[in-house]
Length: 347
Image 1 (spheres, rainbow, N blue to C red):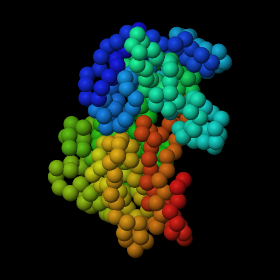
Image 2 (spheres, one colour):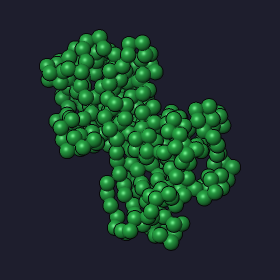
Image 3 (spheres, rainbow, N blue to C red):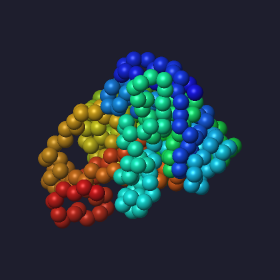
Image 4 (cartoon, rainbow, N blue to C red):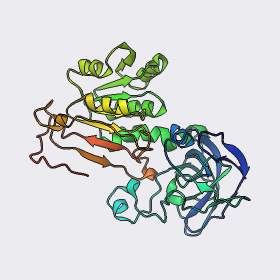
C-alpha cells in the first residue's frame, strides 16, 4: 500500500510503498477512506513534539473494516468506523474506574516506537503513530481504537468526529463538565474551538464568549453558539472578558496551544473558576502563574490546584481531548463552599 512517511521534521512527507501486518487477536484492518490533517500532526511534523522517525502520521480518520483478527466481536468486515487515538484495554485500574482515556496497559496502548504493525523494504523501522497511522491506504488497529458508525454517515464528516469534534465537545462536557447557566470563554476558533463553543451551547452555558483575531471565524462562532465575541486586537483580551462578565468566567478553554493564551485562560477566571488547556503547548515550554493567585485573599480563589486529566471511552463518544484534556481546577464553583484544606491535590 501507499503511505505518507515523515522521515525528518520540517521536511515534506514522502509517499512510500509500505506493508501492514495481517490482523492479530483483537486487531482490525481498515481501508482508510478519509484522513484529516489535524494540527497535532503538524506539531510532530514541525518537531514541536518528539516521536520516533520515520513514521506514518495521521489519526483523525474514518474508513471501512476489511478484515478482523481472532476474538474481535465489536465489528465485522464492511462496517464503517471512526478511529480514536485513546485506545484502551478495558481491564486496568483506570479503565475499570471509568477513566479509559488514561489506560496504563502498554500492550494495547502501545508507547511510541513499540508497534511493529508497519514495515517496508528499508532496514530502519517504520513507526506507527498513536497506534493508528491514517496517512496510509490501510490501518491496522486494536478494536478498542475504533467506533462503529451508521453507513449513511458521510465518512468525510465522520473523520472529523474522531479528533476535532470530540476534542472540543468532550473538553466542555466531559472534562470540565460545564453546567447549565455557567459562563464560558473559548480562546481560539479553529475546528476544535468551534466544537467547544457548540458543546458549551449544548451543555446549556448561559454565556459563551468566543476569542479570536479572525473576524470570519468570530462570526461563524456566533452561529454555533457564541453569545459574545472578543477580538484581542481591540485591547487587553483578559480585561475585555472580565468586563463582559463582571469579573470573570466559570470556565475558560484554551484551544491554541500557546503559552500566553494558556496564561490568559487562567487570568480570565472568576473566583473558583476552571481553566481547561486543550491546545498542545510545545513540548518543554512552561506556563507561568502567579502563586499569589492561589491564596484565598487573592481574587477569592480557593487555595487548591488540582491538575486532572479525565475522560471516558471513545466508544461512548466521550473521550475528552486530543491532548488529554488537562484541566486546572482553581477550586469549587462560586456557589460551593471553599475547601478547608490548603493542601494541593492531584485527581
